Image 1: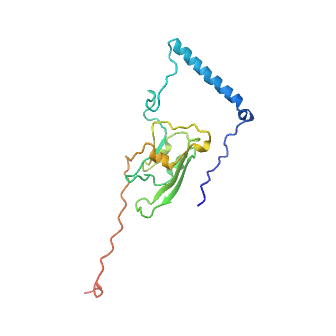
Image 2: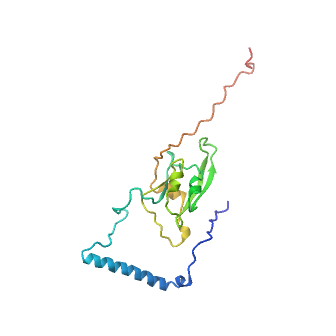
Image 3: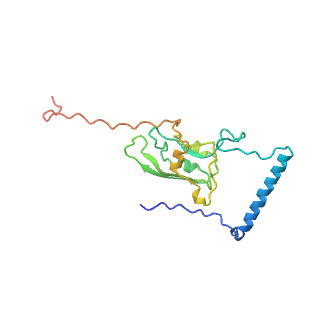
Length: 199
């Protein structure tokens, strides 16, 4: 099986020669950081409100909205498999087109034989609108309040995978419980050779 090759976007950002020189951008970043530090230090020394430090994840900011749309989570069935049925509604409704789903087929599951083999979200382009959560008919995808760890050295490291969405803050309280698989119909009872059902 050939490995999956992730697509390249036509409008990927390109660094200018000035940005590739590295040192000017480092100096610019240091000047911004130093300016913010000195401004906050001056406010703190004069008794005014400056920057407040929150020790995340032990503490959360008081102005954090209780329904903040943060990291995506996939709910699980009672057996630990994803609640998702790979219907692709979330990928269809996504305005940024950042959700990629590869569907698999399980003939043993007579209720919903489709399931996601691959479920990935590109966080370098996600706008955190929550439309994927609203579109899902199975309550299979949610957005936790916590903000994901977005910084990365490479934009291709910012893809959220199926395993991470299932294992990070695992949730099994789907609003639409996954139905149990229907048992196959029982075989008819064998009849005697002489008994053909005629009187």
